[in-house]
Length: 187
Image (cartoon, rainbow, N blue to C red; front, side, top):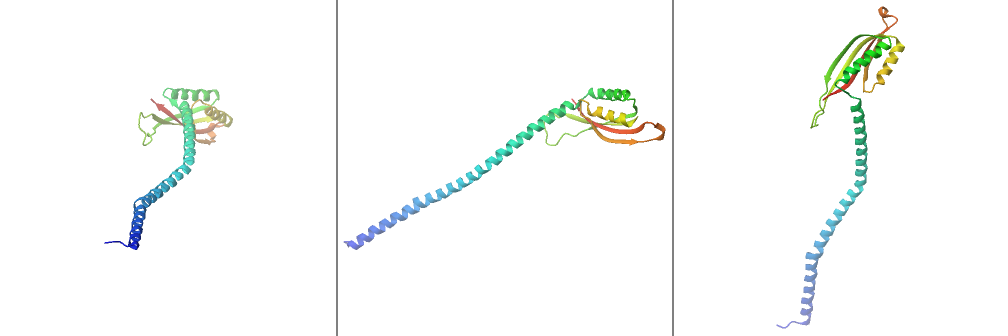
């Protein structure tokens, strides 16, 4: 069987078409898929890169807050009473009231244990909140001086409530009911 030149040309064209088809099918399409995957990865990386300054800024903000909170915790722990200092605090109250010519009628301390925050592990530090109810007789200027002295103490004391009454039986003094709270660390 002898092929005519037209058939030879047709066979060559078919071979070329098969070669193009094989090239397209096995190489070009596979590379196109890989290129599109790489483009998607580049887009994802660009998004992460765009978010990284925000994350870095957030981390720096959190670090600054942590430093500030650690500093506040250190200051608070320095001003928190420990054991025997509570007795010294009571002696200080008695001395100050005596020098200001104030009469302490009653002094009632109550101890309340604070719960350990949830999720915290390790050595628990036992905090106690001590509430002191004081009833005293004083003049208004002496009371102001006394409260300023309490504020100036080297440990943290909160004045929770203050009630001032004018009673006929204690004139010229005022009847003052004062609630103080403080945190004590029991080691």
